[in-house]
Structure formats: C-alpha cells, structure tokens
Length: 92
Image 1 (cartoon, rainbow, N blue to C red):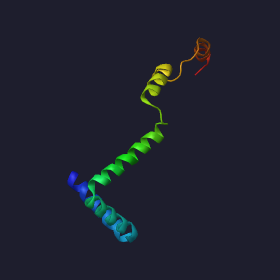
Image 2: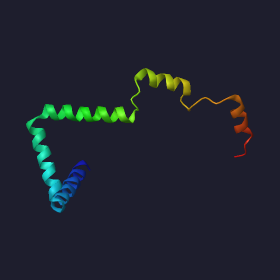
Image 3: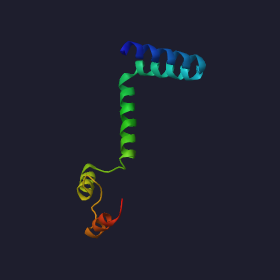
C-alpha cells in the first residue's frame, strides 16, 4: 500500500512538472538550495512555522491562554443562572 501511494505521488508530480514547467523549475531550485545549505533552510522553515503559530494563536503568551481557559472552562464562557434557566425552558 505504501509503495502504491509513493508511485501514485511520483506519477502525479511528474505529470504536474510536464504540464507546468515553471513550477518544476522552482522545485528544482528549491531542492538545490536546501541541499546546499540545509541548516539555513531548517532555520528558515522554523521561523516561518513560528510566525504562523504566532499569527494563528493571536500572539497570546502561555499564561494568558491558561487564564482565559480557566475563565471559560472547557465548554466555553460561563453562563449566568438566568441564562441557564432560560435555555431549559426553550423547546427543542
């Protein structure tokens, strides 16, 4: 199964390279750059990953994230007793 998935991926990549020669050129240049400077490439990928995590996480520090979780709890923000009673009275 793994071998067939590999072969299928290889065929798709080959057809894509034939159809879009510019994309193939970029892939070859990127592969060459990684092989020439693997440490720099690793640091660049790490920096991009960190930046994405920072943007998606809203830039919260760990302590801010924990305190907001404690305030909301695992099911979301706390609801007042009045809202809970109103929810029970509503028909489904």
